[in-house]
Structures are given as C-alpha cells and as structure tokens.
Image 1 (tube, protein in one colour):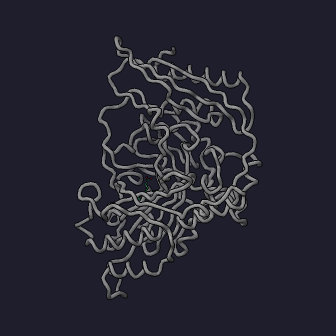
Image 2: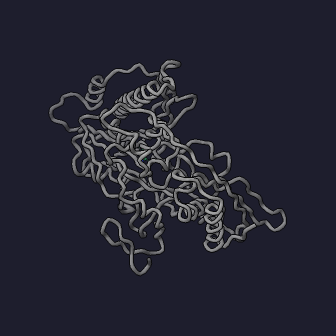
Image 3: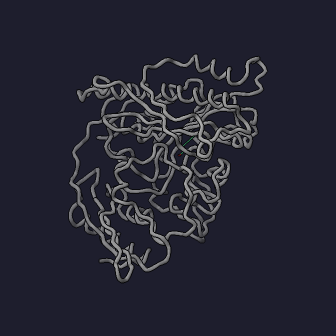
Length: 460
Ligand code: PHE
C-alpha cells in the first residue's frame, strides 16, 4: 500500500506510518445503512429525527475527515486516548475515518447555525469483537443554538431559552437528576462565556428535549413488545431515566442519559452545553447551545429486539424483509441460530518493556458507552507493545463476520521469567450457515499463524 496510496470514494490518499485501515473495513465502506430504505438503522434514525421537526438533517457527509475535524476542532487535547492508533483508523497522519459525528459540528455550524441540526452517519472505531461491538456503527449528532444578539428579543438569553422550553411537550417520565449542574473541576461552568442562568437554561432545555425523545423511542419499543405478545414494560413499571455526569472535550457541563429498561440501567446518549471556543471557531461566537450524540445500533437493537450487531450488515432476505418503514415497529423474529464453534488460542507475549492493554474478563460484562465514550481520560505516555484491538483486527480480517465473540479467558505472568501468557476464546458462528469443524479449524489456524507473524507471540 505504501507505494500506491489508499483509494476511498474515488479519492486516493497517500499512506504513511500512521496508516492502519484494514481491508475488512474498506470492504464494508459505503453501505450507508442509515439511509437505506426499510433498514432498521434508517427507521431508528427517522424515529429520532421526527422528534426534532424543525431541524435540518445532514445524512450524507463523507466519512473521510481530517485529524483537525475529528479532534482538534473539538478541543481534544494532544494526549487524548481517542487519538491513539489502537482506537482509531488512520488513512495517514492527517486523515482518518471519523470516529464520531461530532467531527462535522464546526463545519455545519459554519454553514448554517440558525436552525437546529442532526447529523447521522457511519463512524469507525477499533474495538472488541462481541455481539454489541462492530468496528463500523452509526451515530446521530443533534444540536440547537440561540443567538445572544437576536435583535427581535428584548429578553435576556436565559429567559428566551426558558420560554422556548415551556413550549416543549410535557411527559410523565420519572427523572432522576441528583447531581448539581456544575462541578468546579470535572464539569465547570464556562465562566468566561456563560452566566450560571444561561448555562442552566440551556441544560434544562437540553434535558427536556432528550427526555421527550426517549419517551418516543421507548413507547415504540413497548408497543412492539406488546404486539409480539412479549408484554410491554409499561404494564409493570413507569419509564424511568436518570442523568449522570459525563465528560466530553466539546461540551461542559456534560451528561449521559440512562434508561431503566428490563431490569438494567442502559446508557443511551452523551450530551452537554457546547464548548464556546468550538462555536467561535465556526465563526458564530454569539450563539450558545446544546449538543448530543446517540449510537443508533444500540437503540435499534432494543427497539426491534435484534440480538447481534452483525445482523445489521446482513444481506439475507430473512433479515431484511422483516422491516418496513411504513408500518409500526415490530419485533425481529430470529431465524434459526447456527451452532457455535469455540476455539481457544493461548500464547506467550514476546518480552518487552511496553505495557500490555487487554480487557479483563470482568469488564466484558459492563455495557459499552452509549455514544461511544470518547471521554476525557489521561493516556499513558508509553506506547503499548500489545493492544487487544490489534488481535481483534487479526480475527476480523481472517474470519470476518464468522466470529461472534472474542474474550480473554486467562492471563498469567510467569513468576520466574516474568513473561506473560494470554488465552483468548474465539467463538466462531456464522449468521448464515453452519460452519463445519474443518472450516472453523482452518480459520483458527490462520489466526494463530497471523499472531505469530504480526506480534511475534509464542503459541502454547
Ligand atoms: N461525540 C461524543 C462521542 O462520540 C458524543 C457527544 C456528542 C457528546 C455531542 C456530547 C455532545 O462519544
């Protein structure tokens, strides 16, 4: 590749030592599930858009963006972990596949800031292999701003926002919101730009708008459940949500919204008061407002009862024919599940001083973050010598969608030599057919050999 560059959407990009987009990702590129008629991701998008009828919907922005768009323009620090090559697909050192729809915020504000907008798009992240993670998924960004200098208004900004809040629909949702609006270090008021009243008014409008959206989504989910005879949650308990403090470089203060759904708190979205320097960069410094980001797959899985994220990519009519955007949402009727073929691979890591980044078996059970979770955490300054996402990619490149799950099942440090041994369980299972023993063995052998070649591990 180094000589020829990488061609995406008819544009050829020079490659360099940062390039890490694998063929398996390029093969999925361009499906645009979020705008495919009758696709569950598209139906989910439209359902959410319907709650923001005055917003413009930007659904065709290309996925190749600059490092500046994806990170710098949003105020990501230089050492933010989201920038890491273990987490992000780079085309070259300046260009990447967007990791979130926020990459377009500044451009869209610059284009037209006067209305609210949504941006729906495919986003790309290196991640685990399991039933709720896929390296390509879809997000929706939403934002609304007010003009501080609106000449038509004699009221001050906080009052203008509070009076538009009063026009929002009323709901009877149970809302827990235990935290104070600001936290001095973690989630400060942007004192240079906003009065506390202004920020509180923006936050109140944001929360009410998103609560209303959640009511719509879960009412549709309840109806679908009831229609399928699986019983609506609404019959047992009222819908309950809670606001949890969160951290994003491009909003302050920030929150996550969680919903109590079938016995669990489920993260649904991330949001906050837009970082004012971001709006200044877009040339609209007089505007103040809110933004949110929501992952569409998670919502679609819950709405339709889709058990495995790989299904969204299926071209099988047994899947696609079940969705009709002109009809009320119905639960997905699973077609026969083919048998799983688990295979373990155990190996010694090569000796090295760098840290080893693996997922612990326990953290597998915790839900992935709602919008994707590019939260602000310090990154280790050392470069890891082994990152689990590299292994995930070897598996995906060799076996593609024939793998359902990859889990670390054992990790062990030799007391004398100090060498580290890891054991992963790779669960092979196709959504389309039964894998034969030979097919699973062959895929597994290929993965074992790749691990030796790529990382110099010693197989056990
Ligand atoms: N971009 C954030 C993410 O992907 C989500 C987000 C969007 C948070 C807008 C706040 C405001 O994790």
